[in-house]
Length: 175
Image (cartoon, rainbow, N blue to C red; front, side, top):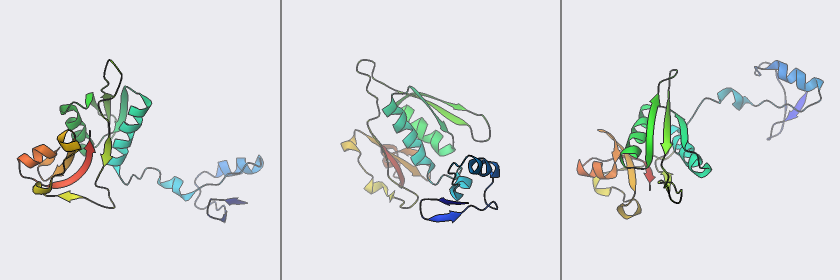
């Protein structure tokens, strides 16, 4: 049995395919079924902060009121900062399973239904980390937005890091 996997033709091998029954059913019904090795690695995430920001961005564009995000300590700190600075309405940490989730209630203007967050931009990525000293702290939207910085004293905004004379990794810009 041969299928096209996007790069070229490959013979389906039962040794690396976990779900043999789907291949047999597809062969009986003459349907095209082409498993991919990447299916085995679905749970690997290279940039959880970018995933966090993308989930928030997608929920804002879709007009959702609440968004659920898989939790981590860094995501909890970013959520706390967004709440303290008034970008989200409220949040709740739900401890279910080993990881838990964060439920974030997005903040909208009651009159014209515009979200408080205009832009979420990831700055430092796993492929290109961006570090700044306290003298080179970025100004977001000429001081109207915030930069979230991961420092040796924890996660904080650019203004807090500047006040404590700390540098660190620039995680994202929010305005």
